[in-house]
Image 1: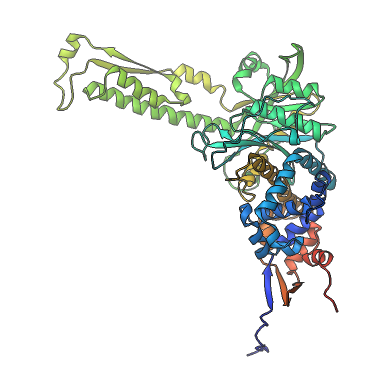
Image 2: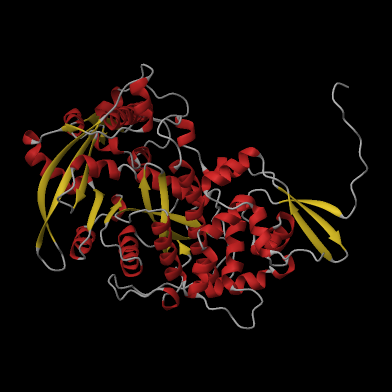
Length: 580
């Protein structure tokens, strides 16, 4: 052999390895963000408890970020992953009873803890709480949850109850979702998210009943955010499901602003009135894909155009008018998609109606007027293009029936003729609105282009919701107590914030000329670099000596870049030195 390679003695049986993996970055992150301290500020320690609530609950947060598991398995996970060493809690002490009691305590101060954490994150990362995106997502549940009851209608001002004064969200049947059968049990969790060039950062949230609509959900969320976080300035950005004049007036009356997409029908007549005089300007906003198309390739280049109208709405409560701006948005891409979808629907409906016409003319079975009506209604369904078609079953006279050729075997002589018509003029009328949408805002100072760019950041909030259900794995859930379910969901909101803090901190350290791939580094990528991080454990009787191995160069560079301590530093502070 060219290099000297020697065989050593077999390792002693009292030396073993423990792979703490991603905890090498998760543990110092929780420490840096003062998770335990913030929780303990709101949950005084029980004098008889061995471990404070902050430490126990931070272990549970770490478990969700590391690999989401059931409460009953957290103790075994802590032993396998070395969490018992990093947090100084024996694995057998992390049983579901202790974790459940910690969740019970967390429930009693959940809103205040989340708000304090949001304020700390804002200060620590120098994040202004001026522009906040709101977007709800549903969380599915297993089990009957017979103990879950509906909340009373909540006030939407500073008197709104919170913490232990507000019961858990009602786990109940909600509307059909893509991933939930009709009647599936759920709650809705709304997230308040800051978005900038480094991506999304969820910082606050609230839960509502599974059958509650977006109007009441955003009203409760705003009331709690204002009461507990209290930002000096705020523009709340949300989608069409939250839009109402009441919502706009509510924020304006509180000294804040709103920016919402609005149902087109609410502002179509205003558009028609001013269509000929609108001044359109191309928006500066481009999607990542469209930015790429500007620099490479021959793919179609799409863009947005904006036009704004000053308008007045009437507050339903005070009956007073207040000013708004209606931002009309034209998307070349949406125009193409809308027309393609309409053309496909029209072609499909026409084809099926021709089949029905032929079936009636042939005298096939089930071609009586009642059967044909049911068939056509099923065909039309909820298709928007159905409004362009009309149909009727026209009775044939006795002479017309007699003049028909003899029916084929298994058929009967037709008694009706099926006729349908297509309204091309109505189609052309609708085409003038293709690609158009409306936004409404109460802020009168900021530029239209800036507000539109802010609104388009809503897609990042949808990504945060996806992570909430994916790596953080908030669903599916099964806990018997609705109070503990609610507490766990709020704890997962803190986990989600921490998840995005990792990638945000990394991206913020990128140089201006860093490659795109580096500037879009994700938490998943960072954690994958810590898939292997070994602690050596030497057993001496009933005692253990823990020795962390050196981080790899990549791991050390990541920890330095993120401003996080190494596991060696954490363990050296938490574990005593062995006696000499």
